[in-house]
Image 1 (cartoon, rainbow, N blue to C red):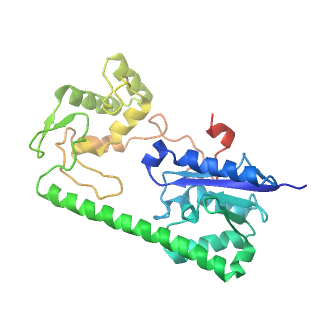
Image 2: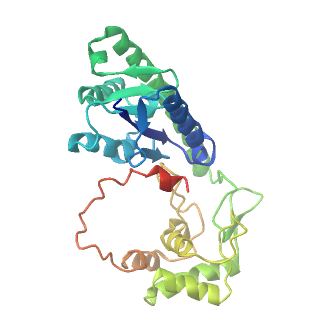
Image 3: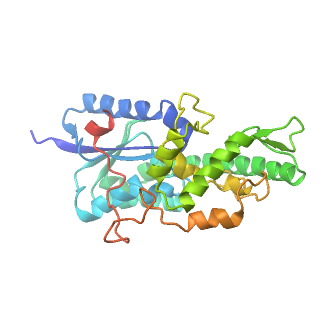
Length: 312
């Protein structure tokens, strides 16, 4: 018996889900389905994942799902293959015309889609089945409306925070490690020894030291890491140095994820001229220019992860 190839796609939209159960749950659904359908095998060398990418904004179309669509166009995923997903909302939570066209595009290529949560199996023939089309549209429309309502609630909450900020009130006790929010919730206390570490890192960068060399220098000089939310990490790492030198909070900016920047929210501890001088320096992997011979090259399969490597 010729076995048919199945390909998995796993997606979730938030960092909280990364720390939670989403990957395990979706992976178990794949395993359970394969156990019940022995005529299929999972191609472990070709799986697609978008971890922490939104299907409402469409960011996943530039990641793993976009790579899957490209793989269809390139013939790496062929007619007769089957895509395994938890539900249709993993494909898209965008407006119904965009979401339904995405599903139709996959089916027209002869690639089946199985939604593991409800056991539905969509094929090219489903495009001629009014009931199958109506069901898929209703599922995707519901997913879009849920995401739209959530987006509206988040925007309303942010609008309220902007009002508080305009009144001089700080909206969170979380702040950079070199600051401490005062009880009045309007002002910060600067922590001098931590500010000195920040200034030292910027000074070393201006001297031309690479990220690695700055990391080594800070550790050799006995400076503790500013990572206040993982206290077990005492020393500096290249990643921590990079983040610090690019952190706009040092010039007073509050930059919430996905929202407009608020200038003057924090007291500045680095001058803007110094900050932007550092930003203008080469920022390759080690603080130098990229060694790529083709700066426009794109890794086509950046969203493809080999399962045997991923689970090690």
